[in-house]
Image (tube, rainbow, N blue to C red; front, side, top):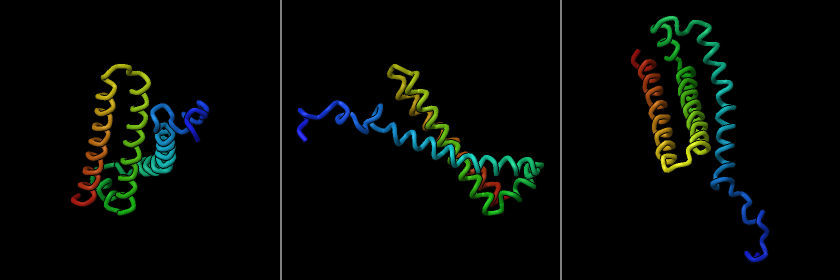
Length: 127
């Protein structure tokens, strides 16, 4: 169709605020849905006493299912935090500092996830 005859809606359809809003919204919802069972799993384990001491936690993390679920929890949690904080930065920072803030948020969340995963693997594999 010729651009002279396109409606304003047709031109803007699918663009969102910056052309990626729908994907960002979906990613937030998917990470939140993933966090529900993972957080319940961790809460039940913690209330069950798996973290009573380092030896008990290490033995618990040595079980492959627990190690994998812990890594998935860390990935989902830090991804969810990064998405949420990015929205806050986009909504409330209206200067050139917005890009730096978003970059810092992303960097810190990746670093946090990496530290958590390395700690999990260290405890699980070396004891």
